[in-house]
Image 1 (tube, one colour):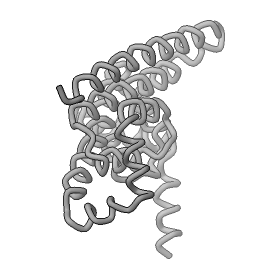
Image 2: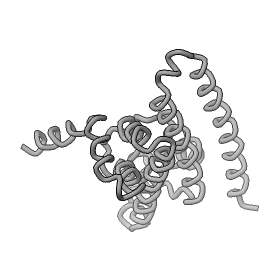
Image 3: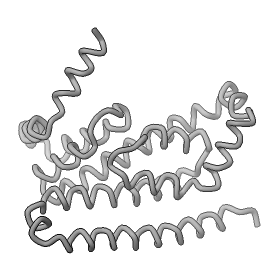
Image 4: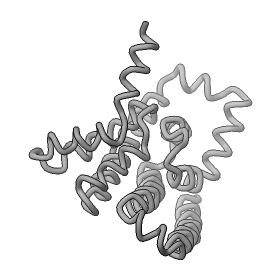
Length: 203
C-alpha cells in the first residue's frame, strides 16, 4: 500500500503539473522555485531535470538562480547534518573499519572533484554524495564551493537547453559551445582543487 502511494505521488511530478504548481504559487515570488529544488536533497526520487526545467519555463533565467539556490542549499544542509552526526561515538567506531577507512581516505583525497563532478549530472546519487562528504568530514567551505560550481553548471545547461530547445535544434553548434564551457569549468575546478589541497596541508 505504501509503495503504491509513493508511486502515485511520484507520478504527479510531470512537467505540466510542476509548471501548473509553480504558476499557481507564483505570487510568493521565488520561494516556490527555490523550495521544489531544495526538497530534492531530502526526497531523492524527485526528478531534477523536470524541477529545473519547470523553473526555467515559469521564471525564465531567474529560474536558473532559484534552482541553483535550492539545490545547493539543500545539499549543504544535508552535508552539515551528516557531518555533525558523523562526529558521534557510534559513527566514529563504524568509520574505523578497514574497508570504511579506505573509502573515506579516497573521498578525502578526491573530495573536491568527487562533489564537483557528480554535481554536474542531473541524474545521480546526490544524497549519497552529500552524506559521504559529511562522513569524510570534508571542509564546509570546500564542499560549498564544489557543490556550487558543479550544480551551477548542471542547472545552467539544463535551463539553457530547456528554454532554447528550438534554437538548439536549428543550430546544433550551440551544444558544442555548452560542451566547451563545461570543459573549461572542469579545468578551472582542477586548479581550485589543487589550491585547496595545498592550503589544507600542514605547514
